[in-house]
Length: 112
Image 1 (cartoon, rainbow, N blue to C red):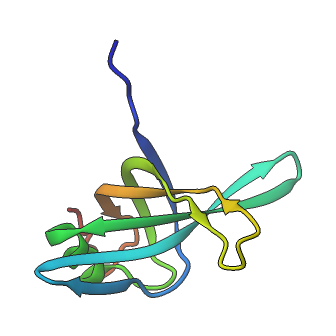
Image 2: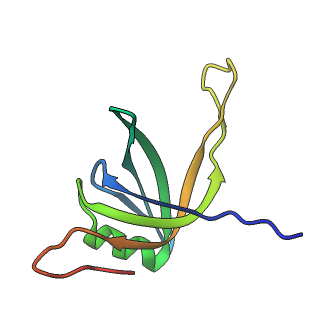
Image 3: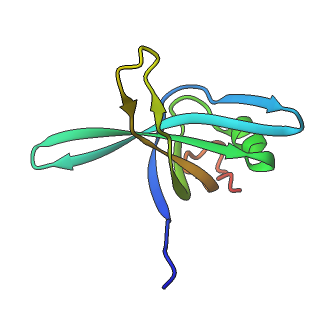
C-alpha cells in the first residue's frame, strides 16, 4: 500500500525569507506563524519551511515579513545532534512545492 505525506497550512511569514544560492540551486527558508483558537485561548504554532529552485526565487520576490500565505508540500525530518553532544533534537520542516500569497496588494493575488 502506498503512503501519503501531504501538509497544508495558512499563516504569516515571521521574518524576511533567507534566500541563498548553493551552486546553481536557489534555496529559500523561513517560518510561518499559524494561529489557532483553542477554547477562549489563541495558540501559535511555528512551521519551518524550505523551497528550492524557481519556486524559491518566486517566494523570495513576493513574500515579505507578515505576508499571509498558503503553503503546501511534504514534511521532512529535520533531526540533528546537539553541539554539546548531550543528545539529539527531533523536528520537522515543510518542503514546499506550492504557495499562494493571500495578501491583496493593489487588487492582485500572486500564485506559484
